[in-house]
Length: 62
Image 1 (cartoon, rainbow, N blue to C red):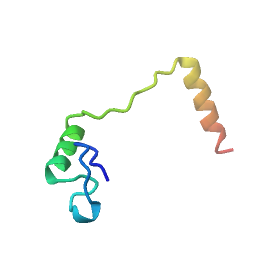
Image 2: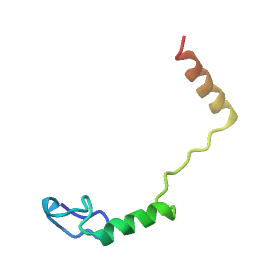
Image 3: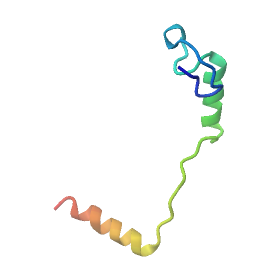
Image 4: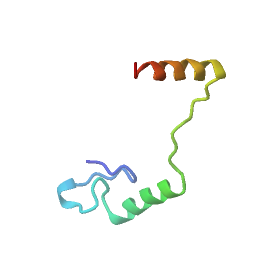
């Protein structure tokens, strides 16, 4: 298995820090999350698209 941070190959059965190879890589990953280093791109919708989406979601309950 490869560590998602450093890409080093390691035996996951011997690591207490799975899916990371070490405590250091685990903490680097946490730091990335806390500093917003990981992001999910947002999609901007125009008013017409929002209205269509609201209608579609409103019709689910009927």
